[in-house]
Image 1 (tube, rainbow, N blue to C red):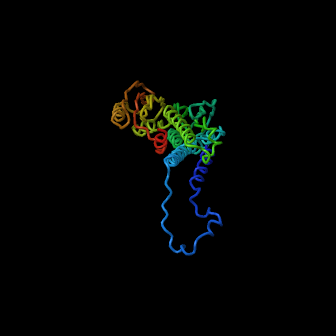
Image 2 (cartoon, rainbow, N blue to C red):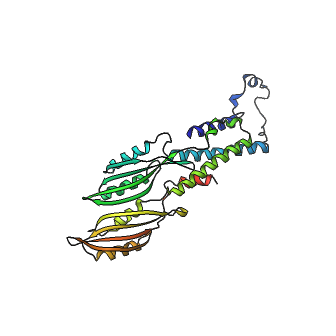
Image 3 (tube, helix red, strand yellow):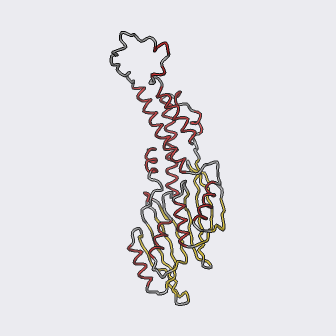
Length: 322
């Protein structure tokens, strides 16, 4: 992708510079200056720009803006030719979060409009807080990784996290021909065609990311539920499913199971969730004795907080395609 942008942008700059650099004059031209008139040179009006030339310059500017947008997408995705880069980053980040990866199962790459996605099932074990930290790290990764399924449960005093992650690969579909173009040789109609091709690519990428929920934060509701727990409570299990991402607002439904030493703490916890920003609802699904005077409570919840964009520049990029 960067190769396409670099070649076209360089050619555009070359075209813009032709005839504007005084050093480009030939020695013969520079030696014909009249000494009698060299002291005072009359002001020379800039050459008039014809409507056709103005249109050509406008098309070049539009092309430059779209190429910048393409570069943004390319830099925020994993290289399409390297299917292991995203997996290696996930392995490193899990270890850095203090977790042990016990399973990594990459799946077949799925081609989407302007984007390719490599799903991967992953299982990690460690402390609850470390798992939440890993989820946050995934969402803040330097290149896009999208959480698609998340489930946490306690097993033998360790938390087991099962995730499905989408690794976004940059695939400049439909733009292969642009790599062979030279802006210096393009007429206005050809420039318009190049711009329209890039705009179609940008729209496809933007729509695909919206459908995939690229800006939805799974870690946010999980972190909020954890932080609102009574101090004596212990998390046991959490299942969560994304239910929508319309107008960039995320929506999740799920069930959070925890154990508490006093059943009276559960109603207070539910009321706290209901009043907390971002949660639309919370209800007690079940309450039963967990032994040793502990109570096991399963709480259902709906989270509709506003999603934080992974990168605010994405909004500008999407607008550039309109």
